[in-house]
Amino acid sequence: MRALWPPSTGSSTPVMKAVLLRYLSLVADADVGQITQVIQRTVPEAEELIMTIAEQLEQRGFQQGHEEGIQQGRQAVLRRLLELRFGKLDTELAARLDAADAQALDRFTERVLTAASIEKVFAE
Image (cartoon, rainbow, N blue to C red; front, side, top):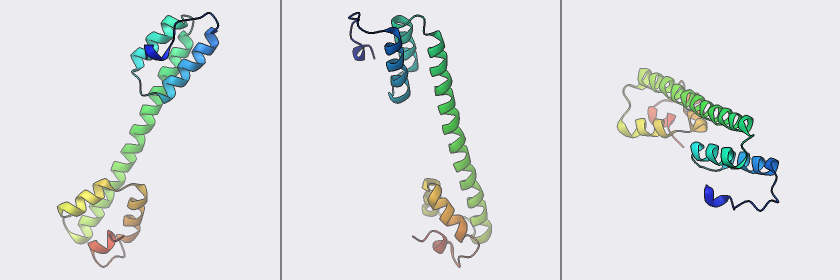
């Protein structure tokens, strides 16, 4: 992270530095602690910026966890419906269900009540 920030030449304003560091915090896959330290050293008055970045990272983590939880819940319900209708899933079909994205889960769910066999539920 330090390598991305050249020594001050006096031409950079604190606002420009804060904007750049905020941008980096949003798009770079850098350690949050490093970003915070660079901001504190470069723009000591940017405590509010640090809090904003922390809040954004927390929100991003919460959103990702929420989406993953919804996906896992959908998979669990579909697995239960499939097992009630067709019996225990074999290893291959269980793996396909676990790897399914949202679109595939939609297709499988639409077919679970009308398909004549479990293979037809998973048919492409």
